[in-house]
Length: 195
Image 1 (cartoon, rainbow, N blue to C red):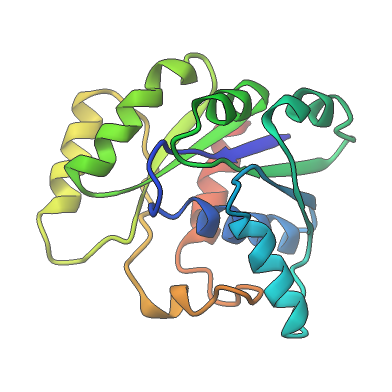
Image 2 (cartoon, helix red, strand yellow):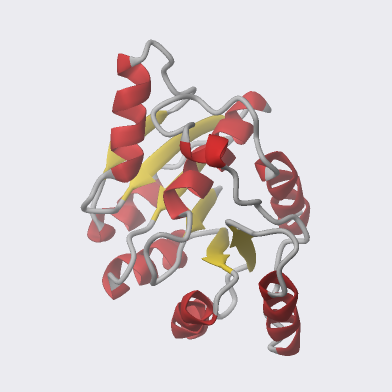
């Protein structure tokens, strides 16, 4: 099974989503591997920092390039789950990730600018199961409700779980996540949609 975190825009929580979902899957007993397609190597950096802190992630993180994804997908073993951290603004990498994926998570902030970038890749999703995940959600503001209404009007699937804006989530960078901040229920929703 291959899952990708994809958005054409940066800073929406793709790497955070990748690491948290991969951690939750590993906690559930799955054999997990993360593929970092981003030139910045944020997922790899997270893994290296966790290792340095004596708190290694419960899965391997490796850097790859888009043209290697079909080969990686072809070597997927039974029961293995790969989570791909796709880079922003790289159409080739985004399309390659979507093409090999069984499910695509579209993390986005509840802003018009961020949502616009989701529309850009909507066509590439076609028949690939996918759902929008609202991240960095500020409670008590109108933006999340407006965003939900837009997504529903456009018939774009979305997770009912939303990831709140929390400082301690940012502090998790470089460590194995302990508090899941809703990513446990995101993982449950995703797995249910894939059955």
